[in-house]
Length: 218
Image (cartoon, rainbow, N blue to C red):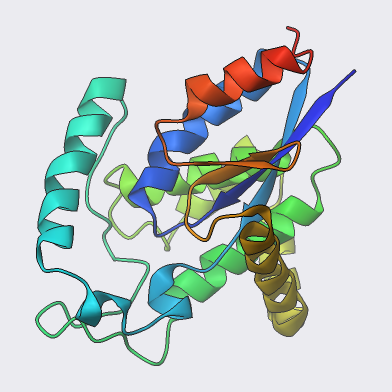
């Protein structure tokens, strides 16, 4: 029997990027479907988060993420541009957020099309690899079109849906966030399996162990 799980994911989260490739590999190697559940990042949900947070939070992240990427042999580079428009000096989040709105809605549109073959996860993985893998101007040119193609999707079709249904997509993204919180967490990446949340990029072996207890097979 195919096992199912939900992966709550943000395109602005480097830890989501570090996790998604290994979760995708887990799904592809087993009778397992992991559904993509995009959420907006804290910068959108709690715009004052970075102003309130300890200044060492960012300092540590800039040490930890490249180190983890090197350990897992995953390409890494700071986003160019950052999906969130933000004044780095003041940490203030801009009111208009064209990059993160578009990419998160694209992710939700991709998730709508996933009937069990993993296209939602594949699109998020390819897009995150652009954003966090060092691609310059990841939002322009053929970058996202190629990411969609890797997932068996058409970017023009996804973009048309984003333009036509922004409110509906945002409602689905908000529902994803509510489901994440109902499952017992609030951050990303969080995988929820059989009602149990697993938060962080370092929980994948633990997830596999739990799934094996529930009958996970290749």
